Amino acid sequence: MELLNRQFFDRVKYPEKVLQFGTGVLLRGLPDYFIEKANRAGLFGGSIVMVKSTDKGGTDQFDRQDNLYTVYIKGVEDGRDVQEELLVSAINRVISAADDWDAVLSSARNPALAIVISNTTEVGIALDERDDVFASPPASFPAKLTAVLYERFSTFHGAPDKGLVVLPTELIDENGKRLQDIVIALAERSNLTPGFIDWVKNCNYFCNTLVDRIVPGGLKGDDRARAESQSGYKDELAIMVEPFCLWAIESSHPQVLEVLSFAQADSRVVVTPDIGKFKELKLRLLNGSHTFACGLAILAGFDTVKEAMANQAFSTYVKQLMHSEIIPTLVEIGVGREEAREFADRVIDRFANPYLHHQWQSISTNYTSKMRMRNLATLERYFSNGTKGGADCMALGFAGYLRAAGRTESSHLLAAWENDLLPLGGFLPSVKNYLEQLQQRPVLEVIGSTTDHINF
Image (tube, rainbow, N blue to C red):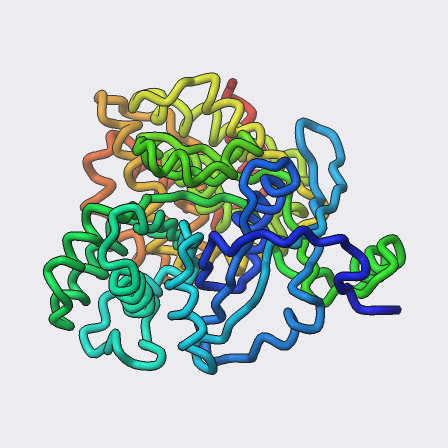
């Protein structure tokens, strides 16, 4: 069977409007997917120059397929099975930063360039004081971006209309602002001109963003064989994604809205003056419920999220956790109750997706830091009005975390949390009670007896 190439798709040639740092599956399954949809709808008319930033591997895999790949969308949405596909042709070329840094700088001199997208992992947006923006290439992503911007500034003599919209998708708070601060710091350390620093501040738009889509990776085994049989070609870059997706971009500037015309092709690209609501929904309902439920799932012997959600007692627990205890804390900070309910219901669909094999052990990585970041604020809000109890699902989930993360050291872990939990009404005694129950009874039995008396 032949490898996917241009013969299978009549590609339209578009100018290179997007410089993308990163070749991973999240970028290919979310921003690149949206840009492809917009091009097909006649709403963007631009292609992507993809930069491979790491030293591992080259660009051969993309070259062999003429930079084409297929996105397979599989999952459950509003109770119905979804199986769709989209052949993405939006990538014009792929450059290795290590092997051809001059080509990356050359892209900065392209008048049509308008957008920079990145996903270089959460540690990628960090200030490396030893980095050299004049190296070929600089080591860190912020230094690479600084070099690209300086090349563009120099080429167009600081023209205000040649600034770029920068969209980092790394999962850190205020990713756009943080990236801009680092670029400015690197420019100052490198003695770049004050005019360049002013241009970075005033003519470029670093937007905070939030991305949300589970992209497990490439197709494997039977899924791959079935896809190849149906399409008639081999695709080494094919990826699977869930139906749900969201790209929230924080800006109200008219120039940004004009440049990001691809947002018009899909309502799941949201350009808004404040992405705080979307961050809270994702962090508390998706990530937070994952974290509360994770320890219990591991103790119950479930390997994957979908396996746990197929159990009625566990599924009921997760629903009650979100609807009865987490959603009220979001309403308290101004999120609409109906909107939160709809988001929670979509999360249930996502957790139960029969095509995803999301491992609980993977979710439990850095368990304590995740519990603190995702759920401590929820607990504090829940008990802020003097409530003494009622957080049974959260207390049970917290006890499950202690039991699974600490195993024989649960009491030691609990002691480390006591200063945080003591102000929370009756939460700490409730956690200790559930911890004792989990030590004496089967996990699913404890879950069932807990959720029996909770209505939502």
